[in-house]
Length: 472
Ligand code: MSP
Image (cartoon, rainbow, N blue to C red; front, side, top):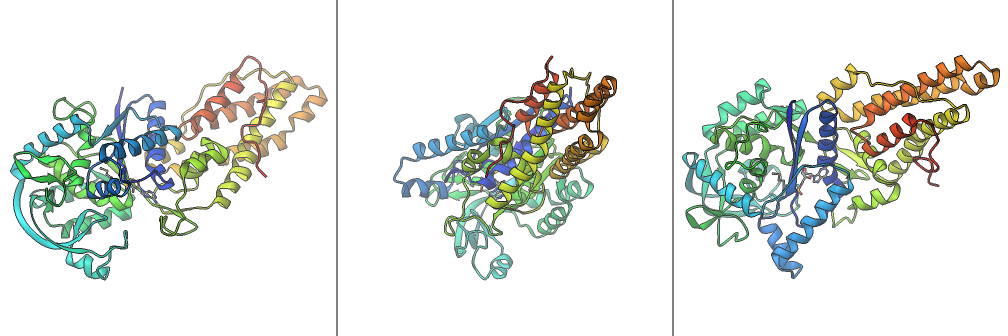
């Protein structure tokens, strides 16, 4: 049985989850379910990133004890992942004792590639990283992601010698040994890699107290990205446990804003540890709201729980997996969401289920003998992480089936008394629905299970309430 390890970015716990956070989990979960369906044994990691100044500041502002503050927010993220019906197998908090201890052991293993130096440069508190002079000038001194001015910092820190690994990382990206998706981001990263200096991986404790202490140097605390990236290994028990069954990861899901950390610092850490590189890094776009970046100051942040409450989790998964392309930015508006629910989920899938179940019940049609058949086109799309395209492909089948009912008119066959023909037509329609429904399983797991139950029960009966009641 193939062993598949799938990871998601661990969000900062400096606030509540928003709909943008859903993408990592929904894409990773769909892929994980797809892999399980084809027989893989899957490990699926999720977690929370709990160190760093930003989080500490927020706890102070909220006048809360830091541990209570992060505990409270970590719980919100965990509940959120559950409500998305994302089936992770491992959850890690970077404040877990095991993670901190293992992260320190990783630092010690990396010692031959770490040195101390003093650096003066521009720093963004929001990104928690130094930016190059070029980036500073290009953005006129203001971070485009956080809208705060870069500040001048001079610090003596520990550095990771990215320079030791650059040629190896470059060739791994170029050859596809570490595949970066989508292709245009891969080209961006290759350019960025060429300009990347060695990276500072610690902060003086006087500037950052909320972090993992650097082993053997009380005056320094680990840089939050050094701490966070290692979660993908520590959650497997590294370096205490042998992780060869699970590492390298099959797919790591991250947003476009943090791809650079996962394709430059992360492979450098892995190479420094003599570990293989992940097979694929899937970088999704951002969710916008009415075409704008979500922000508290604009007041357009969408609470994912509100989306789920509106029409249930299936509608939420449907929108973010079909109407958000895996790799591009996409827009969320309540209007689009309503229309996806009413015009597609209710009209296409809900109706199809209701019509076929009603026709079956009325005419005492027994379930067909059904076994799913492999579908090459679907497999190709799923293997290349084109989830929204795979979803479109399934949807075409669902719409075709609705048309096919109109064309074959089973009600007319029933009237004509041609029982044999009626059974044949109905069995073919229901089998085709079950086949489309099988492909749907990774996307809408509970709806798919429900549809299977309806059409494989000894007596087919329509659901008392439509699967997707129309909203006005
Ligand atoms: N803590 C880091 C990740 C460390 S991984 C070792 C971080 N956290 S985050 O909370 O800012 O982001 C978590 C994930 O959510 C990232 O994959 C990020 O790209 C994603 N998104 C945050 N806002 C988003 C949107 N508006 N749209 C889509 N994804 C977004 O970065």
